[in-house]
Amino acid sequence: VSRKNGCSAREALFLAKKADETELFRSATDIRRRHFGDDVQLCMILNAKSGECSMDCAFCSQSGHNSAPVSSYPLLESGVLTRRIAAVSGNTVQHCGIVTSGGRLTGDEVTEICAAVTAAAASSPLRICGSFGRLGGNDLERLKQAGLSRYHHNLETSEEYYPAVCTTQTWEQRRKTVQMAMEAGLDVCCGGLFGLGERWEDRIGFAMTLREMGIRSIPVNFLHPHEGTPLAGQPPLQADEALRIIAVYRHLLPDATLRVCGGRPTVLKERQRDIFAAGANAMMTGDYLTTSGQVPDHDLEMIRALGLSIAT
Image (cartoon, rainbow, N blue to C red; front, top):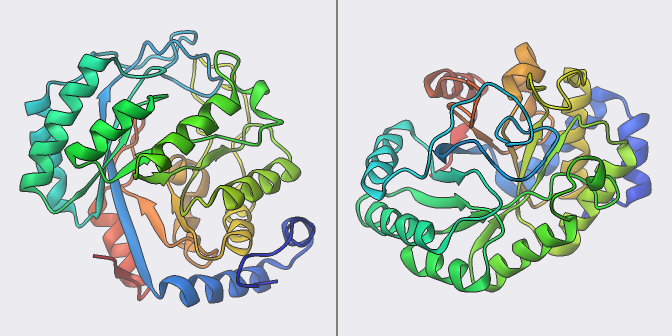
C-alpha cells in the first residue's frame, strides 16, 4: 500500500486496525527512507505571547475560557524576540517557530513581529516560522516580505469532529487561513492533535484532507490533558496507538514531512525513539508552549544512537 501518492482511506483503516505493528513499521520506514533518507529535521518554538486567548479550544491551557494554571503575558518586544531566536541557533535546529496565543494578532503586533523576523533573518541561519492565528492576506504578505519562511496553522482534526473541540471559530475559517498563507507564498505547516476522542475514521479523513490541500509539513501532536481544561480527564493515548497514527499517516502521506511535536514525552515515554521506525522524519525539540519537552542534547543523542543524521 506504499504507492507514490499514498494509500486509500480503506487501506489506511485496515492498517490502523489490523496490520501487525512490526510489518507496519517496516513498511513505514521504507517509505520514509525512500523520500527523506535518514535525515531528521529539528525545530524549536518560542512562546511570544501567552494565555488569555478568546478561543474556547477544549484542549488548550491558554484559553481564557479554561482555568489552567499557566503564565500570561503580552507580546514580547521585537528586540527580546530577536535575542531569543539567536539563542535557539546553537541547538542544531533548522526552524524556529514564534507562537502567539489568541485568535489573531493586531496590526501593531504584526508590525512588531515583522521587525523581529527581519532582524533575525539577517543575523541567523535559522528559518523563521510563525503561528499567529487567523491573519488576513495583507498581514501574511507583510510577514513573507519580512523574511518569514513558513506559517503554522493547525486544523486540529477532521471537519466533522472539530465542533466537539472548539465553538468560537469554525474549521472552515482555519482552512481559509491556511489557504491564504499558501497564496501569500509562505510554506505551510498544518497538522493536528490526536487523542481528543476522535475515531480512526476522523484521523484518516483528516489525513486525506491534508493530502488534497497539498500540505507538505504536518505536525503530529498528542493530547497532554491539562488541569483546568474540559479535556483534563481524557485518558492519554497509549504509546502503541500514537505510533500507529504516525505509521498510518506515513502510508497516507508518503512525501510529507511528519513532525512529531506536542505530547511526545507524555504519551510515548520510553518509546520516543520508535517515531522514526513508524515513519516520522522530523520532530520538535526543547520545551512546548506551556509544558516541558525534551532537552535538545538528549534528542540529538537519541537520533545519533539510532544511526540517523540531523538535516541541515
